[in-house]
Length: 299
Ligand SMILES: C[S@@+](CC[C@H](N)C(=O)[O-])C[C@H]1O[C@@H](n2cnc3c(N)ncnc32)[C@H](O)[C@@H]1O
Image (cartoon, rainbow, N blue to C red; front, side, top):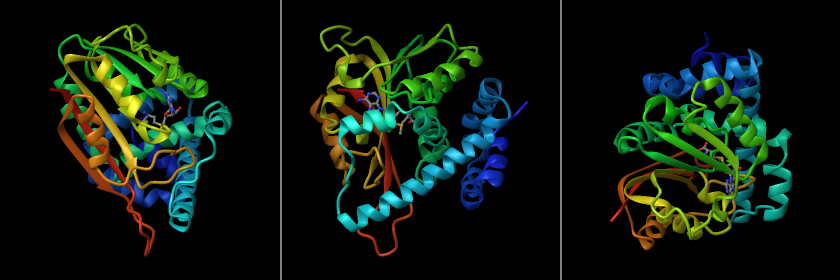
C-alpha cells in the first residue's frame, strides 16, 4: 500500500527541481506531514492508480513555476494583476485541464512548503481535536476535498458538507471520497461560498473550514458574514489565507495579518490561535509572501 513517500518519489521523477526543498520540509516534520499524506496516498492510488503520484508531481511543478512567475510580475507592477472574475471562472475554475493539476498542488503545498506546514498542526491539533462531539462541519472552497476527508478520518463522530465553485475540483473530491470509506458522513457539491443562504441555517455548524479561499474573492468581507451566520455558539472556524502572494487566481491582496483578524472581529469572531509563516521573498523584493492560519471562536 502506498504512503507519503510515494509523493516524494513522484517529485523526484517528474519535478526534480522542486524535490529537494519539498523533501527537506517533509523530513523536518515527518510525523505531521505523514498524518496528511499517508491517507491521501491510499485514496489517490485507489482512485487514480499508480499514475496519481507522477500526475501530482507534474501539477506541483507547474503550480510552483506559476507562483514564481506571478510573484516576479507582482514585484514589477506593485499590485496583483488578476484576470476578470468571469475569465477566472471560465478559464480556471471550470477548466478541468487547469483545475486537476492545480488541486494536486493545492494539497501538496501543505506538507512541502515551509510557509504551509504549520497549518497542518493548527488544523489537526487546534481545530479538529477541539470540535464538539458529533459536530457538523461546513467546508467552504473544499477543492480537492482532502481537508474534509482528513476531518472524517480523524473524527469518526463528525459529518462534513463541502462546497466549491469549481465542478472539476468537486469531481476530484468526489473521486477521493468514493474510495475513502467516508461516503456516509461526507458530501461535496458545486456551490459558490458567497451564495449560501443567509436567511436559513443560522448557527447550524459546529465547525467551519475556510482554507485558502479569502484571497480568491474580490472582497472577502461577505465570506466573514457567511462564517458568522453559520457558526454555532460553541463552534470553531479554521480560516487561512495568503498575504502578499501573487497567483493567477489571487484577487484580494492582504498585506497585514491584522486585516483578516479585523474582518473576523467585525462579525463578532475572536482569534483563539494564529500562525503566520513567510515563504521565500524575491531577492531585493518589496513583498513578503506569507500564509496565515487562524482558529476563530464566537465571542
Ligand atoms: C487554493 S484552493 C484551496 C483548496 C482547499 N481549501 C485547500 O486549502 O487546499 C482555492 C479553492 O477556492 C475555490 N473557490 C474560489 N472562489 C470560490 C467561491 N466563491 N466559492 C467556493 N469556492 C471558491 C476554488 O475553486 C479552489 O478550489
